[in-house]
Image (cartoon, rainbow, N blue to C red; front, side, top):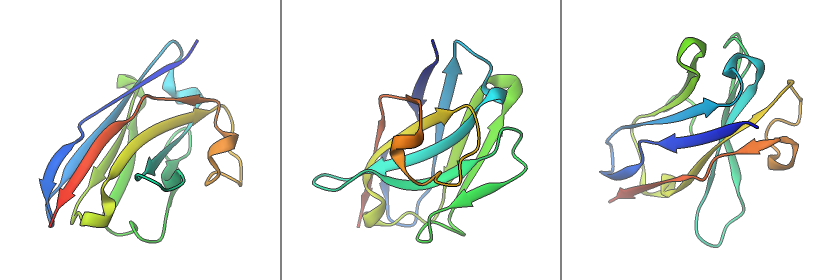
Length: 125
């Protein structure tokens, strides 16, 4: 059984930075295509970023491209989301997710097999 645990969320002022971590246990993270999603109150869960098994390719939602960076350290079984130049509209619960293989529908939550419990990110103006 794979377990994902996010950490690193918090309250930050607009323009600030946070780094989220997703620790994977149960199986080696190198097997998995990993994604980050977020969900604001009253909104659907939306794609943020994703990364191939060995980090060869990364994918970003348009509004975060250039501000957020997804990375992975397979030796530490951890995936990261570095968030810079944060905006109030980035406020949401952030979730990491995993699936075994790449899928061209990586932006759709339903294709992922495993999810973490989420970590709150709040950006004040």
